Image (cartoon, rainbow, N blue to C red):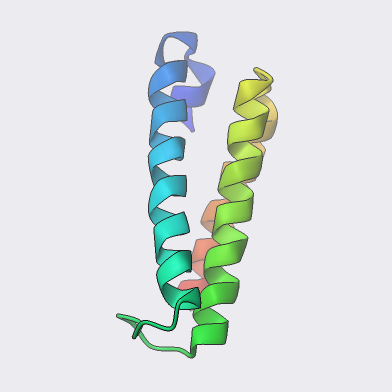
Length: 88
């Protein structure tokens, strides 16, 4: 989150989110396409998780496009909480 607060690192933050979105989108495509998942869970569960992650990252990128770093940071905090819930 610290990078979002530093205007000089804005482009770096945005590039990292774009890369995350690309990766999650590819994983979602693979799960939806019926390929065997690399982790536990059904395809439906994996697809749902990935869809949620993709949506949050897309919303964070949209906020960054509008120069709304506060909203992007809030969405990323929500994303971290979501990932923590998945781990438990």
